[in-house]
Image (cartoon, helix red, strand yellow):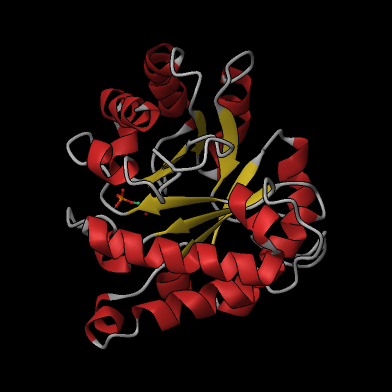
Length: 257
Ligand code: PGA
């Protein structure tokens, strides 16, 4: 639970490259009744692109919002295989994950590309969930804070006049993603504090106070109360456990406190 009541906790489900539209809707049939009571927590599900329409339809009337996992920064044009911000906006997408470590490490996404994606999304009033985090080697070298500082500085470097509600940051140590290992509360504390201070110096104290900083990396029902209960943590970005309705609902309940 965060230490600032003005920030509504957010729990985001990153389905990654899982679930067809049929199976995605089935998961929501199971999930939505389980999380309907947690009014104090905002939830978002980010399916693969081909399932967006079916998921958007299934979310009609629910408070859970529609997310996406990637975007291109240009408005349109000859970019085979890419998806533009305006296309996502028209489908009802509210939030888009950018800079996920799988995109950075497997597909070569750079800090500069993340910055352009952030700005492309903002042109359509879409909320980026900007993922940052160090690799295991970077942590071992003592470079964690420097790496995360650089990722945040570049990703958000072009933003001006923000009030903070239009940006989400997710701290996801790369070594914790999909591994069953999680950062310790002390590690989360150190990085989240640094990010919050950095946001203050970049965007001003008022905007920084409104930006939600999520933790991600092997969040599950067994550790969610501890991790999402930390004062600096405003919710979670959940991968593996979000494919199980019961587990994801338990994580949302933990975020509700
Ligand atoms: P995980 O994934 O929960 O499976 O570790 C988190 C993420 O990649 O966002």
